[in-house]
Image (cartoon, rainbow, N blue to C red; front, side, top):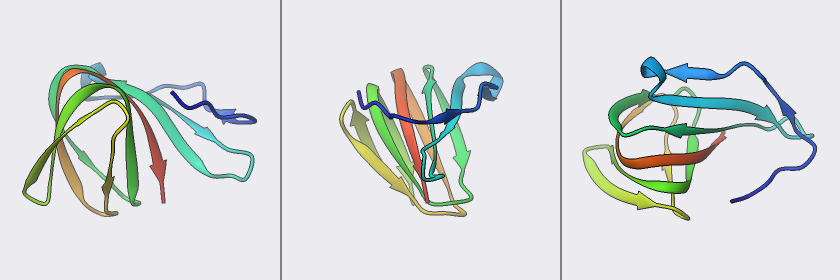
Length: 101
């Protein structure tokens, strides 16, 4: 699992889908915004404003993006264009880091 030094953490949790996804936003020293969180077993649809790279730290899921489904496990990542959406089916609780922009 990666670690990040010299960050500013927003202590208020981002809680989505009735607690099925919980994350915290943090900022690197250069102002770069990221988030780290967990998604519990469920099937959810996320919308994006900015482009994102979702880095899977633990667990497993299947992501449907642009009509194509791909499975991901720890150590893998996927990219999502800005102003789009993706479906995620989590079969084993996923820990992730989201990189924006």
